[in-house]
Image 1 (cartoon, each protein chain N blue to C red):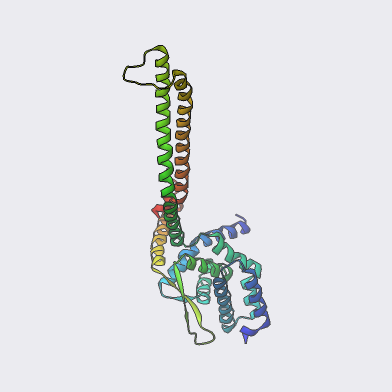
Image 2: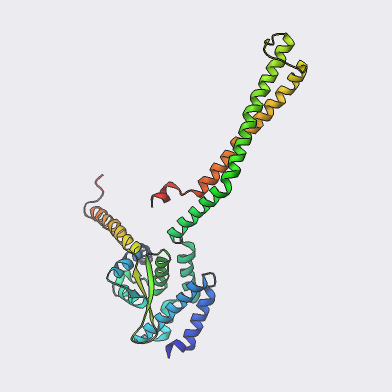
Length: 116
Length: 185
């Protein structure tokens, strides 16, 4: 596979799982945009760029999976923190189940090939 | 101070302009969030030019917001409540007229079509002299023969109108009611 095609494939894959990852990160507690961006950035393949993550955060908020609060920052202006709503927690659970099923199916394909 | 840097002010000003399609409160929050991001990133030691470059061209960032917020479905609960409001509106506005229309068209349809047939048959019977003794006909038989078919036709037209109206209402209700897959969500 060409490197361009590989990068496009990775980009599509990342786009699909980014919502799950952001919601999972927020299971640990509220977080603000820059912190979410840098945490994902440190995870290599999940580094999607701020111009993807911020709009996605807004959509998750519009869908009421997240809500926001302003909290004082030790340096500079108050920050906008994102936290999971009850709907968001339910979505984490359902997406998590979907992901585990997908991973199991992909693992079977990769280990043994299609035996049908 | 980074927040007052002309590059930041210009970037955020352009972003605000490019997001004019969004709700004003939403647009304000988005711009403030990007302002926070720039402040956080530069406070962490990243050069301002690099931070803005990583955010990408204003048009591209604005397009990403519009794709997520305008092209993707809105809050499903909001859509659901709006749909129920439309159902209630449809019932409130449509139930009385529907009742009246169904009763009027149904009555005209059944009574006119059946009585038209009866009048025509009675006219034929009067001509042939087979009219039962218990049927009294004041008008000449030709009047019954002439009146019968138009009466039946009028009744049938009313029944056709009733069917068309019921189909129209059913289509409206189907448009408003949640589809089975959405209802299961």
